[in-house]
Length: 133
Image (cartoon, rainbow, N blue to C red; front, side, top):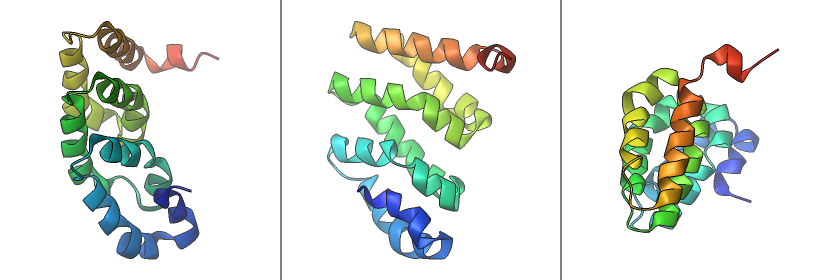
């Protein structure tokens, strides 16, 4: 079990006081895999406390991972961008993350460029075409 999955069990107050501080520390960990794992598992935490408390620490970690020397780390963060955009909101994505996706279009690794193009395509589609019905 990932520590962030404890948030629904602990509730909002206990999560804020006992779980958020170590998560914020891990978002600044020197190892890119640690930061990526924390970002990958934030949905349970977001559901309990909301992303407002984390967004200030989350963005620097995302930006750092976006430029990681390991292409697989960059690819993993790109693959998490749609979920992060959904969790953080369209405004946050437009302001902070869309330029990141555009930057990845010039990456040396073709998988990175392809994933970035896919993210931009999905984020630029009108909502009704995504949720056809």
